[in-house]
Amino acid sequence: MMGQTHELKVWPEYYEALANGTKTFEYRKNDRGFEVNQLLWLSEWNPKIEEYTKRSMLFEIQYILYGGKMGIPEGYCIMSLGIPIIVNEGE
Image 1 (cartoon, rainbow, N blue to C red):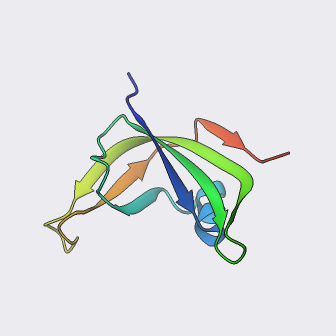
Image 2: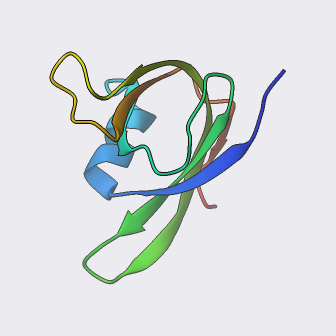
């Protein structure tokens, strides 16, 4: 059963790596109480023009390494993502 959905911005270079499958994780400040089985709706954000593109993807969080260990700062986490559940290429 999937839980809460978190909507997050992703810069183009990181979005592209997610889209082509070379990036399978997300490193974030854990200010939202991320948990396994929750969803991440990742939308591409262009910081140069400060606007969203029309591309976005939905992932389920499969594993979380919380901060305070393994060199990850307290208050941050690394989330392992599965394959995208939904891909919106903005067409």
